[in-house]
Length: 171
Image (cartoon, rainbow, N blue to C red; front, side, top):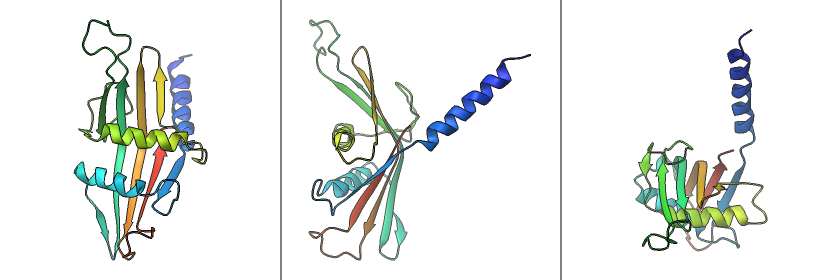
């Protein structure tokens, strides 16, 4: 009996189970805890070159596969000028792999990871998780999907309801 076929079946089932456990969390500009956050996220995605789509006053923008590699560099020799300086490289349309080169570079990585950390650490986040850290000072961040909406029918930009973003984690 070959072990390959049963093992492949088990691995396939595990992937389907992992995808079924993905958690989503929505941030709206109506939120009193995180006002302006959705607007800032949309601006970052537009600045990254992603296109708005839609019509009739409702528009969306979506980023698939945001992956970031972060290193603390604390374990580096103290004589090295990079010792203690954290590095961060992020990509959109990327695989969830350490040091991936898939997708396109995302320049707003520090701002986005700070936002994701706030969302992940919020008490009412629904269990969403974006970061995984390992020994040696490495942390990987992965968001399966960031999908944001703009409702241009809401004309008063100060009252909320115009912007919202939904994050789906990479579990």
